[in-house]
Length: 205
Image (cartoon, rainbow, N blue to C red; front, top):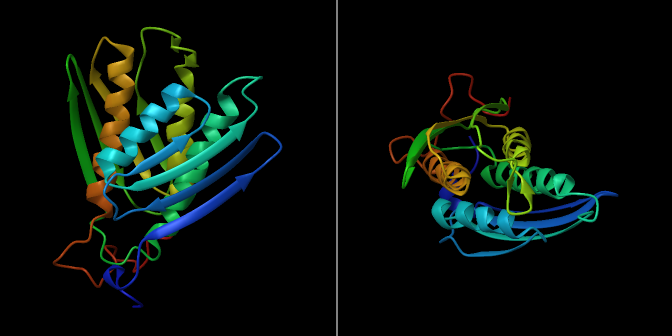
């Protein structure tokens, strides 16, 4: 069966360098929510800080991208890099809870996020915004981040904004929901800490 998660740290480091972006990530799944994040996009930094803090994942990220063109490549590639680190840190997924969901209220907004650490990447995104931008960031880029993260992490991810008016609240509740769902799904199940939660015996696709 291999080593159980308790016998080794669930940490990963990833570097992703392309002609469009240069990104480094250090991730500890069993941290305390300490973050040190710089993407050059203030609002994206704020959302990734929520992911770290509410997911209790220590996250250090440095990104340099072609922001003189737009925010697309940096946003998408940061999702890929963090997702890759998440998948790497999980290892063989021995003992994880696997399934989890979170309902996040934020004033007038309510969002539901459901996760299956399945090895089968998929995103269902039922989130609509009232405006095209939050600050300088295009709201359409948030789906790109979530899709990039889900596919790189190898998870099935459903994000449903059930109601809301304020665009900031809507997207922040999505990131907080992802954080709490990942935290629960990646946690070790004390009743099955030495087994993989699948009848196939693997969660690697």
